Image (cartoon, rainbow, N blue to C red; front, side, top):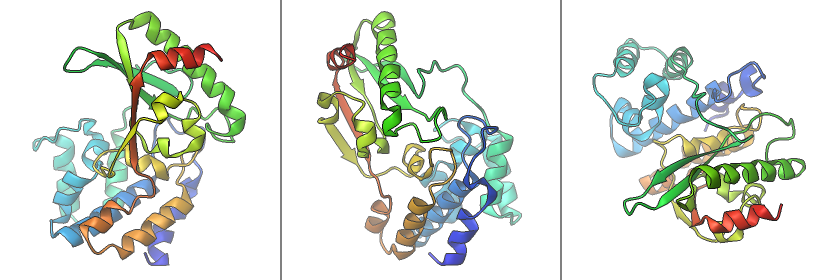
Length: 265
């Protein structure tokens, strides 16, 4: 990736996100990375750029739809098409729509940096699905060694809540690039971490793009620069599968391992 392009996306005042920005608001540079990925995907695959953005990035979701099921009559998608056809810069366009239509999901119950969803599989087994978000309570970052005990206490409280409100829960399941990090894996029982499946990243979903966000919700410059450098060299679809530094990992195990693990804290 030419230095001028990387500079355009990665050198701006929002490299460090202030505490005034809403909890889950992504920096503009992330949209630059997504659009660059879409351009390279379009070049390699032969797909039109707009089709690539629709099918292979999370842009449809982020511009205001907040729904992963594509709808042709979406007012947000129609606006995006009209403005892109008028020649607006794609990064500026999608970021403008994202900010204008931003929704914060405040109905979630958080345990510090963690929350969960309770669902049932096709056999009726109760599954707890884990989610993580930096609560910005520490300048060192949520996974720093100094924050380990705090994270463990949060998880202990979370599983107390699960046990109380969802006694039929049988499994715990996760899915994130974060499971590549020892600082994250150490927060969970070994039975969970030792049972992880991996898949190639799905760039159309938000989860894999989280690896470019730093602990202050700015862009992780070094990781983003490495991504752009690798992206520039991509020649095939197989190359594109390997452009992300971290893959997605999906652990799963019996919930009793979690109850036992946090009972000892």
